[in-house]
Image (cartoon, rainbow, N blue to C red; front, side, top):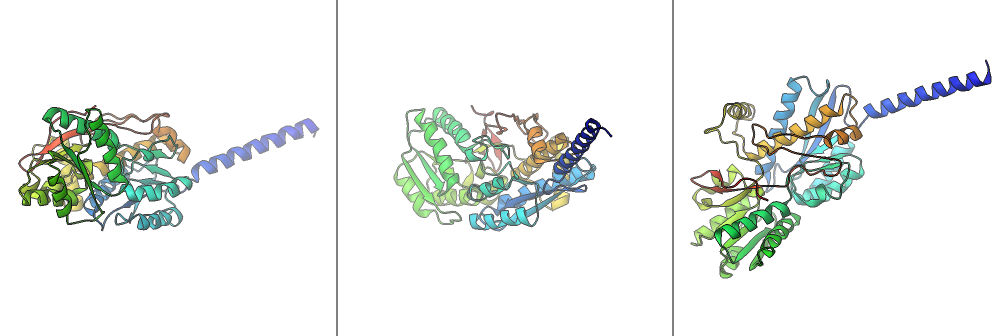
Length: 392
């Protein structure tokens, strides 16, 4: 055999080996096998945001079960592994470590709570895992641009700025105040409110904080009332929203209140009753009320109730929608699922509005935030009613 022919055959063999190695590397992503894709989620199932965590989990499960019943994603079944952090950053870190090391998940989906997300996101990204659509509209969940970070929820700052400006301009408030959770979530809402007021030549007249999990808001409400606030913006979640409004109404203070999307839930009026009538809120997705629902939505509500023994709420919808985005991304990534292929697929993903009321999501190589807007709603006669289209 000539030296030239031997060199040619050696190069051909080397090329074949490299191609085979690359193919194995593409298939051998963590959490991806011939049979399944393992997805992890860190939720609150026992702490102050448990009213949100359980329906988010159930919404994701329903969408994954729908996909699995249809044959899975390129023949692979989806398996969701959920860890309960109790809205505690320390427990969240332990949960992330377990999902990374023991469960070897392919991606993290819908991690809940800004304090938990801020504590766990660095380790997740450093491990090379996808960090997708967390329930924390914090700027750092999508910016600066990173191949592993995608967000579908509009940031607190953007939608709270727009909502505050709309409320003040349309209703003539002049003494806006803020009740906020003393953490990253509350501070992000504060930035949006302050920015919206500044554009109108106003500033917060008073602000007062509370610790996560607080149940007594008597001192905070007394302080805001003494400041003669005519609008109180709430950086609260469901239980704290109800507690704050109940305290105000119990003391005869009928001030208007506006809550972030974290308090926009059917659970708010179900738990608060008459005390929360008139509450304004920001909606990023509409509530799935069975009464008057169109046929496809009514059928979905029925399936959800049959599966979980409860009616869905807005958190159920969010869980289903973000799980649907994951399914779409994995399908478009193709049979050889890798993190890089998934990222490339997500950067091409454009969706339209759906039967659940989604606004449609647009991702690109330059922008991993799918939506930037929210709508204004109000509780009237025990039900959230939309007041506006998406606010600019």
